[in-house]
Length: 403
Image 1 (cartoon, one colour):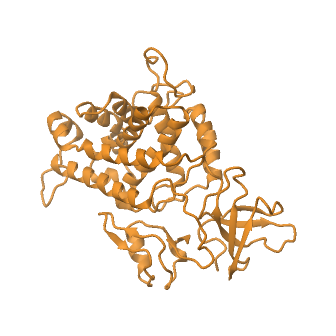
Image 2 (cartoon, helix red, strand yellow):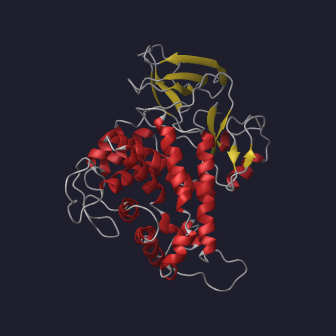
Image 3 (spheres, rainbow, N blue to C red):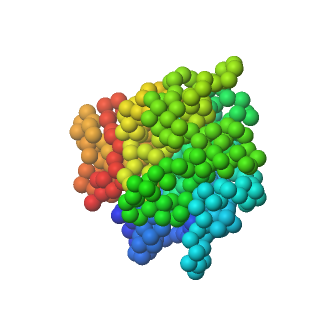
């Protein structure tokens, strides 16, 4: 299988991974043979890349950390939970001229929040993620899920929770602390559920007043979680995940000290960022780079690393960034690559994909070439770059090198 951009989609392509509607039902099942009108339907729901079957790529190994079915079930459960809550507190209006309640009005009724916000659903997803991550001890991260506009924020929360959990594991968090970490990240943007629809999925530039309201979601989240049956850790991650090491974040402008996020004896220093929130901040910034909103160009691992390095120390905890950088794969299975040089100059310009990553030499994966420099389909050519030291590659954008 191979991941392609929608502009590469052709009639006759066979889907390798199912595509789900925002409501959780399968829109197109794996094995579906594409028709000319499919691209329009996929674009309408915000999908800009898909996995299709490709001759010569039968040996491509999935390196997903969590099975796709678990991810999709979790996304659906979280989306339903959020929509149910918004409806019960009056934020969903059907044919009503009455304005929806403001965040302050909703927060003035803490018993309603406690009754209607289904924390148990978030706990279930956290437990499922934790159980799946226990089955392996990955040395590198692999985030490959397809996103659509309707479930983007739930998918983002799950991706962030996975990364945060693996970072916390590197710092020897206990099993209970790991589960707390996952739950806290799943809930860190819960304050956004109090915002009006046009702030959640803006289609036009927001006014300064609207931006300021949106930036209050950490405070809203903290207040919501303090009335629910969750730990103070979860509430503090909701409050502090946009704080920065130099005090330039929000909402409280507290600071960090760039130290490892490990448990210390005694209370934490007043005015400093919680260690769980520091991990959450790094995870969120990384995911926002490699899996942005549909329509925003995603960054390559190399560019993501450069961006994180620029933020390290002043914005993000430098120790956590350094740990994350050691886990980011230069190349993962399914990544599009282009040959930039070879000793005989026979393969330069050829395009293919990574078959298997190489944790020991991350820039020397196993690859398969499927297009020549003219963009013409060729019989698959498999190469192990840790054996072919003369070949150099770079990551290619979806659609690059395709005629």
